[in-house]
Amino acid sequence: MIVFRYLIREVLKAQMAVLLVLLAIFISQHFVRVLADASEGEFPASLVMTLLGLNLPYLAVLVVPLSLFLGILVAHGRMYAESEMVVFHGVGISEWYITRVTLLLAFANMLFTGFLSIYVTPWAEETQNRVLENAQSEAGLAALTQGRFQTSPNGRAVLFVERIGRDNRLDKVFVAQLPDPEDGSGEANIVVAQGGSIVEDETGAQRLKLNDGTQYQSKPKQLDYQVADFVGYEMQIKEQEVDQRRRKLSALPIAQLRDTEGPGAVAEFHWRLAIPLSIPFMTLIAVPMARVNVRQGKFAKMFPAILLYLGYFGLMIAGRKALEDEVVPAYLGMWWIHASALFMGILLLGKERPVGVKLSGLLKRKKVAA
Image (cartoon, rainbow, N blue to C red; front, side):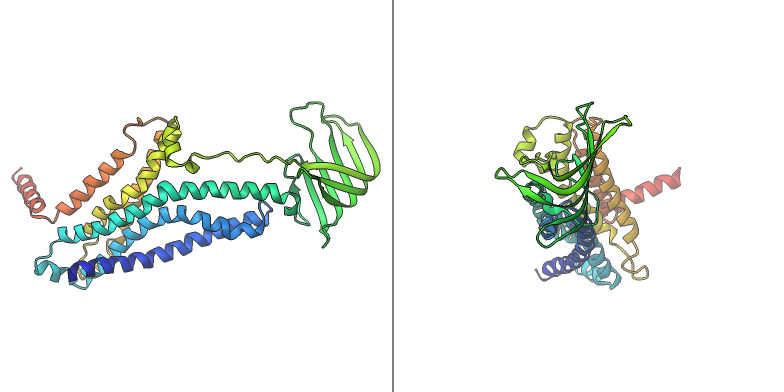
């Protein structure tokens, strides 16, 4: 029991350290992207932390398997480099026992990652879609930024406001109204005004009310245009209804996803299962890959092990694409990838087992005899 606790504790400590570092890197990168979108006016800045938090489950699903894989390599590599594994083997603790102990930790990670991948991540993505929709419906022109060209909420105008006062008065406004793309005879308007304000009616629709300006009106592909000076001018640039965002398959609950037909739904279903299932298989590869001798150092096999991990993850991405393109039949899913990883793990583990040593010696004798 002492050895059991020691092995679990050492791997867990290394995994937590790797996990914190990886999460810090991924969250920082994502934070920069979210902040850039907020600065461009795609959503209010007050939603930055909310959106960042809703992306955490997805990041955790990607990072937890890698952190366990690296944690096993670091912890076991240190034990080999400091001859602790030699002592374990000397008192009768085999590598297979160490593998079984590590697999217990891997199954705990698999259950946690599976819960995040199957239930929490789709819920977080759906919640993020709703938050953004509500922000669009409530904010509207409140997302306007002075000194920057921006597209109106309904996408039919481009606006530029030189300055926005404390009372939401707009100074020096430029508006380019685009013709309706479904109406070939539509007219384009260029409006320049000294000032304006935002007016919202009881239905929630917003209009831009301009004063003291000039309107230039023309039809596409024609040189004629009309010029009109105005004292007051109103234009609607946001309707009450907001188009619902296109729901991705990754935002569907698992039960709804299973009822959805099509190769995209099949690929998404197998993808949600693939990452959690890969954890025990990668553990079978990580334990033998951590074998190093004292002279090599604990990081001697880190690079080839990471290449194996990236190869496995790359195969899963390729398998998902193959399912979407119907290159691989749905019943085969990504099971062939997991079977390949299981075969490789058994091969690496068996290399130092009595059966593996016996088979290796037999093959060598046959090679010499030939």
